[in-house]
Length: 226
Ligand code: C5P
Image 1 (cartoon, rainbow, N blue to C red):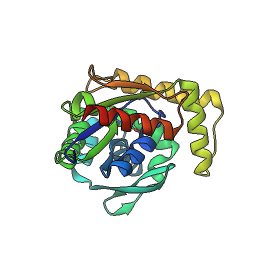
Image 2 (image 1 turned 90 degrees about the vertical axis):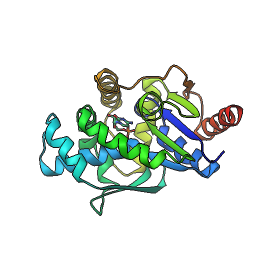
Image 3 (image 1 turned 90 degrees about the horizontal axis):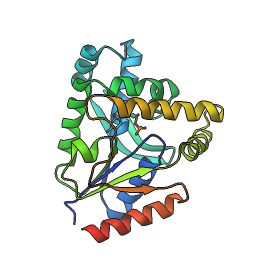
């Protein structure tokens, strides 16, 4: 029904945003890309020269800034992002942001502000949220919880294709795998709301699935469940 909340969590590069965006179109749901919100804070912090370790200044920044999201135009940019009225859709996907986002996201003050916003946006239902802590923390009562994963090599391969599609330089495969591992490690090991599969989440391994097949699988799971 329209009031459902679908939570999709998982490690970096598992295809969450592409799949969530398409699933939302199929169901007529609102898609909320929570990673884009953490990226927006990180982009603004880097622009202002705020240290990714400075929890106090980052929390303050998060409370003061305005983030607006809207549906994106293609898989490479699943979400359009504005910070204080300025469009930063491309900037938030840049490597500098990807490298600093886990540190910025580790601060409880940053997280609690963004989680409040996510709950306000999602509470009426008819929404799909993707991230790291949706099923465990933001909406533990979600109607369907998916934990989307794939082998690191597969995720690195997809990330390379993604970067190519964006016309960005593609780092070598070992470096890409290393960056993905390091982000997962930081996201899983933080003290507050770490990346974790909720006990009642359904794990979907997408190594041998296309995007289309993954979307169909999630639709089937949704229809079984609701
Ligand atoms: O999903 P995406 O890769 O864009 O997320 C970027 C980063 O934002 C993650 O690596 C993680 O550090 C942070 N994040 C988070 N909690 C969420 C969504 C994203 O900590 N719900």
